[in-house]
Length: 352
Image (cartoon, rainbow, N blue to C red; front, side, top):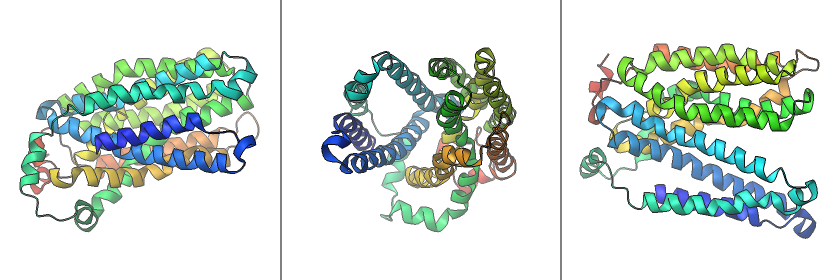
């Protein structure tokens, strides 16, 4: 599945770079773009969860959070590389950028896919998965997930509200700052690059801390920081102060989000037993990401005119983070002392 999702992602991304313009094929151009983006989204859904699941199951029981943190740390590195690629092509003359320059990052993605494919073809299955597969009764995992773990799915949907932070910051924040307050796009891209670069350093430390004191205190603290930082970040945008945008962006994304982003996927995977972990975590997390996907649209709908029009957006972001923190505090079991083979079982539920 990891190989399949990587190939699908690579093909879809490469083909976006090959799309003919609307002037040549008319309405088929946006239709094909949406279809390829949907294929990218489906691939990313299976790819991310599968990578977390495999990493978690290969890791020593007392270092699962640290090992798993590298999956989303890799995603942050990808955001940084993507921003650098866009920054590079944006230096082209406007006509060249709009006619052919925008295609270059999409076409160059084939190199990343080749490296990823080489690595994934050499990965063995984890021991706990092989053991669970031997005891498999042949039942479709998704059927077992929906029948026996629907409460966990509901839990993950609310638990996963923390993920709106990334889309509000990267998508809405960029457009809002450059369009409403005239902050240079180069400055906003630099904020994304700097916070991502610092996140690559910070996120593994959150994993180490979660292995030592537990997932819940680190995750809850990160959500609370994000809730406060959302107001500070959008206020900094409203006064068009680039130094303040950098400072509050680092607090928002490197500190707060850097504590929840590396732990959220692993905590989701740890809620399910081995035999259905991939299907359960994928189904639950992607249902939870529906709000995340619509977060920029929601933000655009609730933003108001004037210099303080950002307040509803910050309140929406903070409410999602607080809801995630509350659900974690009262409904998510601590798992940092639970052996990997007992995750998601009755024995794990008795562990405190």
